[in-house]
Image 1 (cartoon, rainbow, N blue to C red):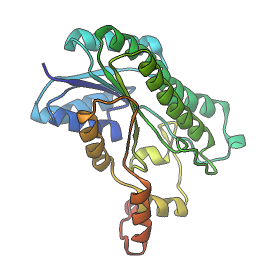
Image 2 (cartoon, helix red, strand yellow; image 1 turned 60 degrees about the vertical axis):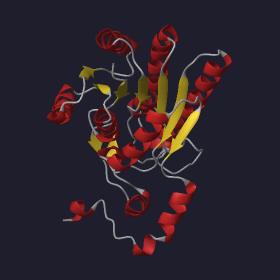
Image 3 (cartoon, rainbow, N blue to C red; image 1 turned 90 degrees about the horizontal axis):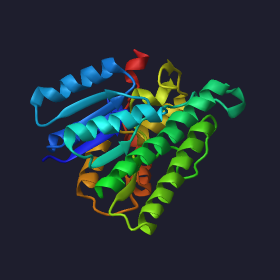
Length: 269
């Protein structure tokens, strides 16, 4: 029986890049996303070279009943779930807190923080029952207490994800459960996430922000390859896998005068 992995928000971007790498390693994969159209397109890409099972589910991480049904269906199809990655998330328009409306604030907290908590709680019930399983939560700006004008709510949600993940790992340890909980710290990824508010409304990035992204950013496929390799080999609880380390960031800034990368060049044509 193949090992399997479930990733939320996996029809595009970083989630799909990770799903693709797991699939190429021989895993059965389960994709969860809010868009049926994007799920169909993602599945078609994977099945070009069929290597295992590909299951897709339309699901909303803010709706526990939706996730509960997906877990039951995945277990029924695959026998169990080996790895669950909470990747689904949305960004905010880069404005100070007093310029954000209630919808933006609520959706950010609901998806980026509460969604991770809901999904973790539900999959933990399955993992405790089967006495095995791993959960990985994706960190983001704010997880390390960083602060910047325009990312206060997003950063608050991600700081909460970090605390929650560490607390969950501690609960697993104190309960002597044979499970593993970990954090994924990807750094800056060049996807449509970086300039879309709540997942759909495009906003313009400042030239200074673009400059930093050109120095420190990477495409999701590069970061996913690193993360999947480490997750596939992991057997420890309370781990953290970091792509953009302080050393890597420092080296990037040193090379910045010679850096010719421009992830936004097509916008200027």
